[in-house]
Length: 362
Ligand SMILES: Cc1cc2nc3c(=O)[nH]c(=O)nc-3n(C[C@H](O)[C@H](O)[C@H](O)COP(=O)(O)O)c2cc1C
Image 1 (cartoon, helix red, strand yellow):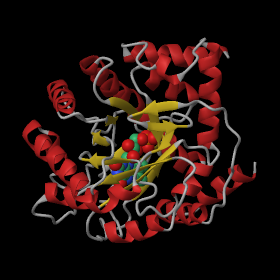
Image 2 (spheres, protein in one colour):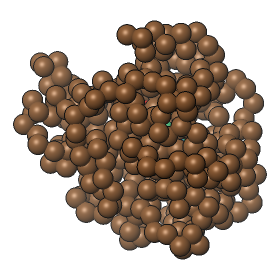
Image 3 (cartoon, helix red, strand yellow):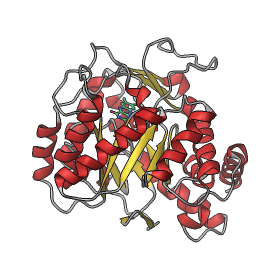
């Protein structure tokens, strides 16, 4: 109840101020600390206490991963962190679309840079969950792949896994790294960064929802050939569905939340069809705000699920609610583990219908 009131109070602030306040509060370890069912997931040598993670973008400077894990997330992905500090785009640059249960942001990788993030991470020991570090290129970089090498080399020692983010719509040219020739060079740079740091870590790549099927097929083939450990589907979309009603629907940037759910689940399911049960694991992100939606992504092929917008719009109770709902749904469906449900329904529409119907009948 108290956290619901706190979330309602935060909604009275402009969205970026509310975001800053939430990071500051979690940095101090203030927030609910729910007792949650164990839903273990093993992936690339890492052990997750449950499949739900906090997606990148909330904790851009690795200021509060422990506080975020305390809310119930089994993993937290900090970043996107760039080699050098940069201010990001002019304000206002993040907008709530309450009628659409969505957000549009064009932050543009505002970041204190990798050295500041490394200083924050040095002070943290024994985090209660898995830590992902998401890295990207500076806006004015002439050699973006070199930025990835540098950031990986600096930050890998603190990470359980590294994500190469090549799907933000707010850094010009970044999404071009998703084409095959560029992707090959990017993965090489990421691996070179790990070698520089002298530590091996699982490598994930985060992709856009606005890809053609042929691009998805090529990315999956490259990820298998280059032994990528995980693909995150997806980042925000540049599309603006006709269904949007909120005043801010025409703002530039990436759209997240409810309108992204079906679109990102389609991309996830398509990747699962190309990958089968081999190759990189899939991490589903986009529009998850309930256990049923998390379950739909798992059925469509996800081993892990991430959310961000639901936390921003609903407050700090959201992750615990999603995990409890997911656990109840999987039990009702006779599912003993997340792994046994992953990829059980290849058609995304069928996975969504099944999970939502199960939730309605519960
Ligand atoms: C305000 C905001 C900032 C974001 N910043 C980043 C970022 O820096 N790096 C990144 O990889 N994704 C970023 N994202 C994308 C999210 O990590 C996530 O992939 C996307 O929002 C879909 O999930 P959701 O609908 O649960 O928010 C951001 C999203 C939002 C809403």
